[in-house]
Amino acid sequence: MSMLGNLGRSMMRGHNNARSSNLMNSLSPELQKDIGWDATPGARERVRLAQIVFAGTR
Image (cartoon, rainbow, N blue to C red; front, side, top):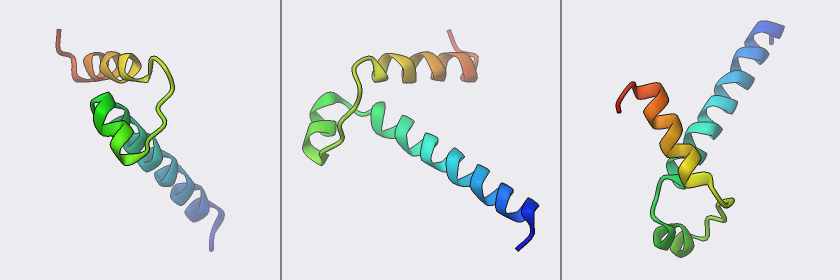
């Protein structure tokens, strides 16, 4: 395994983890509670803000 290969896999893993967390945090609080996701307070607001910023919508 090359060092660049390991770095690339690590970056993809981090990206996928962040994507999954953002997706889970964007669910309604009721769904989060049903599936056992412990979201931090304010996570939904941060996800919404990130969606607005990165999507370019207003």
